[in-house]
Image 1 (spheres, rainbow, N blue to C red):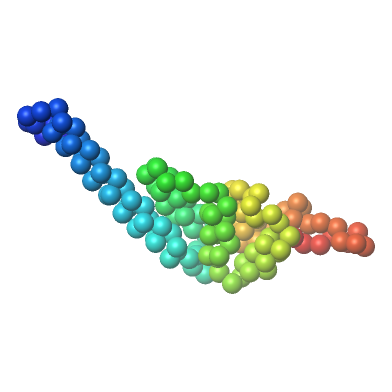
Image 2 (cartoon, helix red, strand yellow):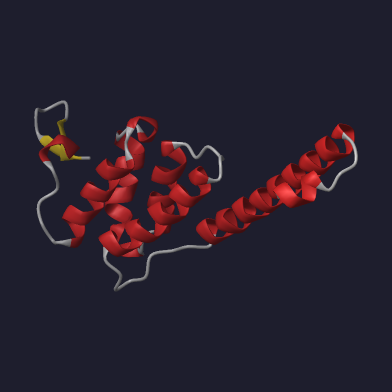
Length: 139
């Protein structure tokens, strides 16, 4: 880069060369971000895949997009998880979407809730609320 600029005859030509290099770099970044977003959009969790494995794939892509200077909202990632899990997770996903505030949930919280269901364990207590008869209702 320094050689390309030092060969320019005037400061204006050197500046123009720098601008062009920067524009090319920005184009490459934008193209890479678009490729990563398409990859993320097309990603779905397999029936036998573990939540942790899928979470690693998603967060790796999201972090790469962020490292290229593009903002990815936490809510966007949470919603991606809820859309991408197999049918066996639909009861908990439906409950979370109906009773939880998805805009206030973190990715780690969603991963934890889905992981507890995958292990066949108990749904975390904070997912339960009391209905009008003070009966616990699963969230």
